[in-house]
Each structure stands twice: as structure tokens, then as C-alpha cells.
Length: 201
Image (cartoon, rainbow, N blue to C red; front, top):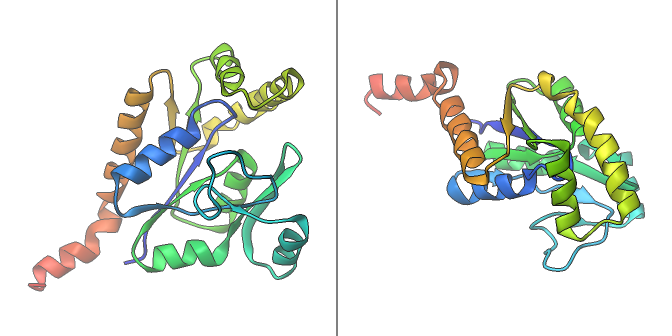
């Protein structure tokens, strides 16, 4: 049976990356679909783990060849989800987790049916600002820009199937786990297993 697709979006500083990493570590049959990006790698990041790091020329060539399911520019750097990587995961029966921005989420929703869409929210804009400052990766100007974009992204939360407010990391993770477990148990996804039981397989 083809694997499910979970799409997780959030504004900067909401804790999306941490929650997604926790989910992949917890569920052995849930895998990250690793995105491609033109941004430089950060200390501690490994090519092919957090992202596939490529230059603009390579990214342009992938667009021309139609290799991306979706791609978008975020804060001056480009990100994209490769069709082949996603198809390979799901064809192997693995559930795929896409950690993408709101633009990407909208594109995927328009192209693929059956995905489960989860939006992560910070408890407040102040909490979002504090988290961005705490990362130590952005200038004051960049943080202001990210917060401005965050407000616009949060307006899209109503278009997602689930909303998690990340005011406590462990509690937010429990909610994300519950979503994965519940969606896997839906009738439409379980009928092949029911058929197998009835046929004695």
C-alpha cells in the first residue's frame, strides 16, 4: 500500500523543525522527504540529512527538467521538493513527512490528493520573536522581516486540517503523534488490511 503524506508548515520560530525531527525519530516508518535548497549549510548540518544543498545552476536545471513537485523562494533562498524522492518513499510503503513553508503547502495541496496538513503555531508573536533571537542566526532586520511574514503565514492556518499551538514542546509533540496515529487508522487507509484478515493473509 502506498505510504501516506504528512505536510507540516509553520512560520519561522514556531518549532516546526524540532517537532518534525521528533516525529521521524519516534515513528520508524515515517520518513523526512529531504528538500533541496540553495542556501548554504549551517554548522552541524549534513548534506542529504537536513537538506540537499545545491547551487543556483543545479536548482535551475532541476526546474527546467520538471523534477520538483513544488519550489519556492523564502528569504532570498530557494527550496524545492523533488518528485522522485517523494515517490520513492511512498512506493516503498513509507509515510512521508514534508516540512515545507506555506507557499509549498498550497502548491502540494493543489496537486496531490489525500495529504494530511498540519500547521504549527507559536503561542504568541512575542514567543516567536524570542525563539528567533535565541537561535542567534538572524540579524535584527531579518527577525523583523520574518515576523512580518509570519503574520501573513498564520492567516493561512485555517486552510490546514490540524493546528497545533507549540507552547510546550512535549505537549505539542503528543498532539502531533496523535494526529499521525489517528490518520493511519482511518477506514479508507485500513481496508486493505481488513481484506487481508478476511482472506486469511
